[in-house]
Structure formats: C-alpha cells, structure tokens
Length: 295
Length: 289
Image (cartoon, rainbow over all chains, first blue to last red; front, side, top):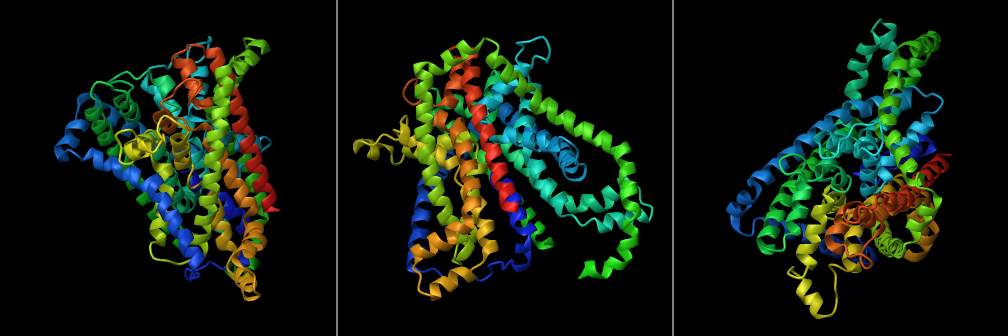
C-alpha cells in the first residue's frame, strides 16, 4: 500500500526538473548475466521462503479438508457476521476516503494557504504511527477518559472512525500528484467559455483524477480489510457486534482446546481476506496501467 | 508542442484569471479549506493532542518511571534488535530487486514485480498465521528446524521474518523509479571502460539511488518499529522475552490495565514516527532541488 504512496513523490521529484527531458525509460533492458542471474535466484528463493510458501500454506490449510471444511468454517454465524462487518466497513471507508481524500488533496494542491505545510505533515502521521499506537490515540479521544468526545469503545462507529484515521493518507497521496500534474489550460478555457466551477470540476478535473481516486480507494479498502492493531483496543471484540475478521482469526489461534480444527478455521477466514487482497491488487495494477497509458 | 501553439492564444486569456482566482478564494475556497482542516483536525490532530496530554498529565516522574521499568526497557531493546535485523534484510533485498526490475529483462519479471507488492496488501494477522503454518511447531518446516535447535516461532527469528515480510517492498518501490529514470547509459559506459560490477555499483548505482534509498529506509524503519499484528501472532507475546515496544502498549492496556504506562511507551513511538516523517520530507525536498 505504501509502495504506491512512495512511488508518486519519488517519480514526481525526479520528473519535475530537467530529468524528464532525458527520461530514457528502459524498455529493452539488459539480458541476465551470471551475477544478476544468481542474485535473481537468491531473491526468488527468499521470496518463496518468506512470502509464497507461507501464503500457500494458508490456502493449503484452508482447503486441506476439502471445500466442505472451508465453507463450514466461514459460515459459522459469528464468523460470517464478522466477515460481513469487515467487508461493509472497508467499503464504507473506501467511499468516504474517495470524497474526503480528494477534497484534502485538492486543498493541498490548489488552495495553498499559510499552514498548509502543517496539514501536509499531519496527513502522514496515521501512516507512520504504529497501528497499536493509532488505536491508543483513538482511545485517548473516544475512550471516555475526559469530559468531551463521545464514548465509542465497543461500537461500530468506533471501528469506522479508527479505520478512517489509519487510511487517511491513501487517497490524499494518490490523488495529489495527479492534481499537481494536471494541465490547467483546459480548465481555464472552459471557465472562459462560461462553464461554472462545479461543471469545470465535474467535466474536466474529475475524469482525469478518477483513476487515482479509485486506486486510493482500493488501497484504503485493502488496508481496512486486514486492519488489526489499531482496532483491537477500541473494538472490545463483541461477537456479532464489533468483532472483525482479523480478531476472529487471532481468537481461533489462541484456542488451546482444539488447535487443529481452530487453525483450519482461521486459515479459511484468512483465505477469504487473501482472495480479497489479491482481487484489489489486480484492480490496482489495471488502474495503474491505465494511468500510465494516459502518460 | 501543444503548449507552443497555445501560447499566443493563452497569453491574453491568462491575464483575467488571477483576478478570478482571487475572487474564488473568498467564496468556495473558504468552504473547501475549512472542510479539509476540520476533517483532518478532528480525525488526527485532536486525538493526537489528547494522547500527548494524557502522557504528561500524571507528571514527568511517572512518565520516566514508566519508561525505565525493566520490562519497558527490554521491550525497546527487542524492538531495536528485531527492527534492525528486518531493516538490514529488507534493504539488501530491496536494492537487489530494484536493480533487477529496473535494468534487466527476464521471464517472470512482471510476476516478480506483482509479488513484491503482495505483502503490503495482506492482513498482518494473516502474515502471522502464514508464518506459523510453515515455521510453527506443527508446520511444514517447524519440526525439522526445531530438531536442529532452531526456534523460529515464539523467538526472535520468527519476529524478524514477520517484520521483514510486512515491510518487504518499501525500499524497492522507492528505488525502482529513480533507477528507471537514470537509464542505462552511465552503467554501460562504465562497463565499456572496464569497471567491474562492484565498482559500477559503488560509483554509479549507489550515488544515483542515495536519496531514494534513504527515503525507503526511513519508511521501512517506521514500519518495522511499529508492526503489531504479525509480530503478535508469531512472537507468543511473552513479557520480558519476545515483547516488543508495540506489543507492550497493547499488553499494558489490555492485561496490566496500566494506561499511564501505555501512554508513556506510545509517546516514544509517536516521537519516532514524527521524526521519520520529518526526515522523509526533508529527503524528498532536498532531492527536488
């Protein structure tokens, strides 16, 4: 997720100056020599040991007792309710981020004002904070320790606000570089021909920003889907109310009575989250290729 | 080219536009700015300020007592060791992957590029579960490793694996665009003049990617220090042994019910995160010049 976040400023920084004129995109590239081939080998081996085999193990465990074992695990009432809650929350978070993230990015790019660098700095905080600290930050306001601030511990609103907090930078940081690169001639032409500001935004700006908004929303969705650390303090893990998919997985792993069965059930839920992440990654890749084609 | 053609037409049209923009500042802009500032302020700044307030409300003595608690000191040490090891692994891996992706063409290149991004889209708890299933006591490799005296799960190696997993692509993603921009000419020129791979890396590649690498490292440090979910699952969360600073924050709230101490440890992590953002912004701004 962060990957996409970083890419933008880095590319932007080097592309802004003279570099863009001599940007020789490596299209052909070098063939592998013996040194590069062996480093590729080491990389693939490390990737397999660290990422691919473990993820394969999750899928293997999830479907180890057949399709039936998988469906039995994820249709348990508490589990099904948690998965549903997680997905619904992630969708809502993505939608709100789409709107508010674009608004904040717009203000950062087009409405520079005194203090906007502070705003810029604050945007990055949720991203750099450890998730458990983000949870504690939320608890500081919504934990009922002080006279103001609603008490949101053990409520779905609490989960929702916390997810908005941790996903705040995603849409802002994907939309911002696109807005910066936008050619303003078309907007000025439209305005000079009498188009109102909202219609300039809707007809000219929005179509160009839409892929970035969508990829920001996809990143927010993926993050919200798997979030655990920031949620754990405010959710209280109430079954059928505030228990999310990640907490169920963790709960299953702590079950000492039937470790084998619980692990299989945990893997089944994890497989659903993995599948959702994979779909989001594919969508992101398609979106980015579309953005790249537009140049 | 399009710009050149438009210039004569565009020049007179530009003159009235500043006036119009100034006009807009009084109208819509105020609303937009207020909305953005209010949203970010209420969502981020207000609770963060309250956290700082809650940290120092009990007084400085209690703050420093909470941080000099032996378990807290140990937790920070564990965090330093685990995050440091994961950082070293991810940096070497990230630079190597970036060089391969930016300069070479080989079968499976797109696939490798896609898989690099996978770890950031996976739930930390699922990362922990995945490592458990392979390296745990009943996992694929766990029993074999254990019989050779290597404990991975509920020990530091597993925590390093989990941390390295979640921060895997950050360095590579920061470095790849810079390498692609730089192209191959310098590299090929140096090679044709007889520089070997090591010399080319130290004299050409490293100076090219220096700023991007530093930026990727800062992001990786921030991510590694704060990892919670994945480390929670693989570490066993044993106080005084595998408890990291981030785990300690959770434990202090949930099991010790000592909120003041939790705020103190969390405050240190906030300071580290803020420092990481400032350093990252500084690197980015200097690179732009």
